[in-house]
Image (cartoon, rainbow, N blue to C red; front, top):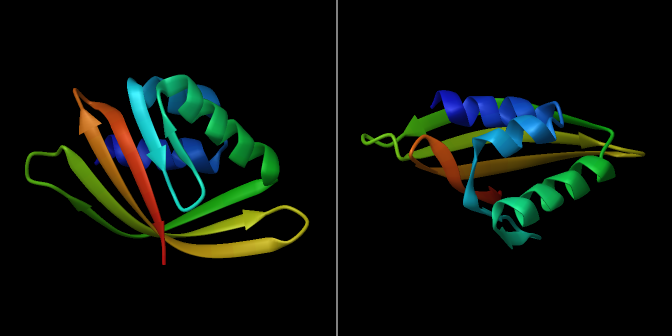
Length: 109
């Protein structure tokens, strides 16, 4: 659970180096617009997101961790600001392998 919250903190703060430290080499990022496999391509996708928006605010509503701690689900509101502001209700399903993030699947509600 702590690693999932750490990832979301890095995401909100647009901290590429922090996110990179949390990912496996074969990490996967999949949302409604993006599907990247591999740490470097995943990091490129995060850089593109961070470049698009001036600020990102994450408001966590609910978290659920699997018994074996290999998966965490996070329900949240994400506020993205650039010239305009967008609020999106999102559920992230985060899978862990050896303490690192193996995959992030984000679903927009």
